[in-house]
Length: 119
Image (cartoon, rainbow, N blue to C red; front, side, top):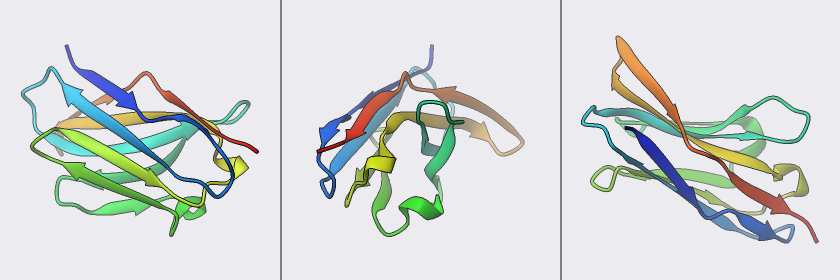
């Protein structure tokens, strides 16, 4: 059974930093890409950042220059360093992993971790 376990959320003041971590387990399939999405109350889930197995990255415009996604292939882990946090970054952050090959991908989600930016 594939599991994505997230950690690192919490309460931080505006301008502060947090680092989210997510580890994938339970599958022998290759990781094609991993990413972070977020969902604020009353809003749709949106892409924050994604990184492929070739280290290509993509960011939402709202986080460019403030957030950085990275991965550790050996640990099957993905990280999201969040700097200069703003109240509008408050949301539940979900880790996503796409496993397999580009012609047949399986998508999995973590349980979510709350990030609250408030003074």
